[in-house]
Image (cartoon, rainbow, N blue to C red; front, side, top):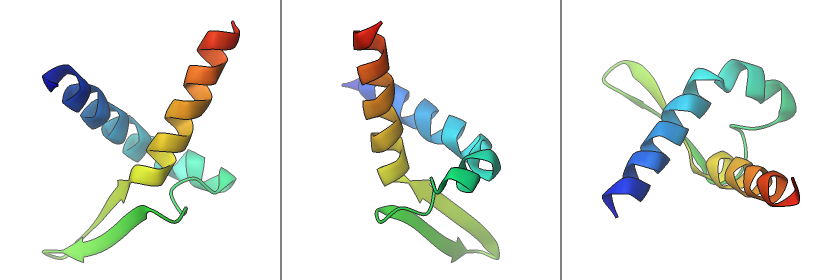
Length: 64
């Protein structure tokens, strides 16, 4: 369980770092991607984008 939590956390950090590049393709703006302002800072939790990218990478790895 802890391993999966770490994997999801790292995926969220990676997607957040790549967000400007991925937004050109519409990722980060899907229904299920949460954006909110807290403490004067804007926060983003791209849950739907994470699931989509995870599914695509899984299919790519199984295909190869």
